[in-house]
Image (cartoon, rainbow, N blue to C red):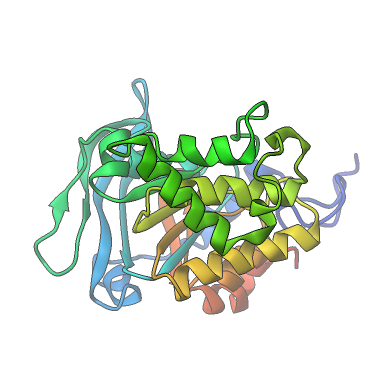
Length: 288
C-alpha cells in the first residue's frame, strides 16, 4: 500500500484509509490531557456511585491498567473508547472481578462512605453488589430455549422459583422475547440474541450494568434498538451503565460521559456530547 494513504479515523473507512492501531495510539497519546481526580468527580456530578482509585490491573503478571481513576454517578452512563489494546474491556473485567488487581481499589455506594469491593469474586459482585456483566455477542446458550437462558441468569437466586418469577417480569417487559420463549436461542436473530443477553443480566435486578461492545456484529437497525433498550434501562429503570463501544460515535452519542483510553491510561475525559465535538477525538475515532 502507498505511504500516502488518506486517514479518515479509527475504524472509519476502507482498509486503505483507516489509521493503524499503532498510529492511533501514538496520536492519541500526543493529545492526552492532564486529568485530575476532581475533573472526573465533576463529570460524575460530584456524587459518584462507582469509583476506581489508582487502579493497576491486568492478566497474570501483565499490567494493562496503570493507575486508572474512574467516577460514575448513579443512573449515569459512561462510554469507554480507544484503540484496540487500550485497556477498555480490562476496566470492565477489573470492576467485575475477571482479572488481577495489583493495587488500587474499586468502590461503590452512595455518599462519601463507599463499600470496597475490590477483592470480591464475580459471583459476589453480582449477588451482593448488584453488578452485572453483559458480554460480547455469542454468550447465550444456543441449545437452550429463551426461557431457559433467562432462568440461567438467575442461577444465584436463593431458589429456582425466584429466577422464574424474574424471567416472567422480563417477558412482560419484552413481548418479542415472550413470543419466542420456547424457541432455542440459536434460531434468534442477532438483535434478538443481544436482547436476550441483556435481559438475562436483568434477572438478578442489578444496579450497575457493565456492557461490552453492545453493537458488535449487529445490523444498523438492530444497533439502534439495542441502544433504545439501554436508554430505557438507564433513564426509566435507573441503571448505572459503564460501556465499551467500538462504534465511538454511537457510544458517545448515547453516554453522559466518555473516557478515551490509551495504553492503559486515561487520555481524555468529558461529557459525551463534548467529545463528539472534539476535533481530535473526531479525527481519530469518529471517522472524520
